[in-house]
Length: 45
Image (cartoon, rainbow, N blue to C red; front, top):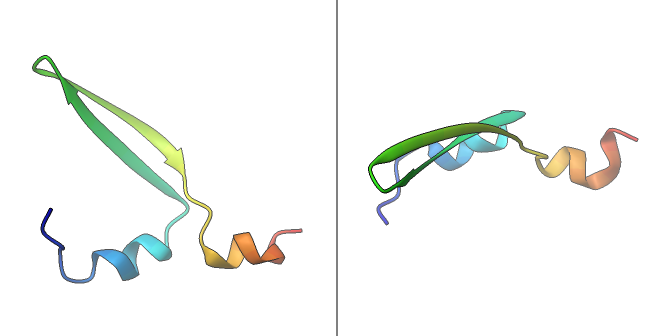
């Protein structure tokens, strides 16, 4: 898989990402909560 410039930094700053999968020609998108490094370190407790 090719990396896109700036994608890793952008991913770390968002709270929700949309995962899109394809199966048998059908597209399915669903939101997923992203717990960034700050949240994982206990900043939300």
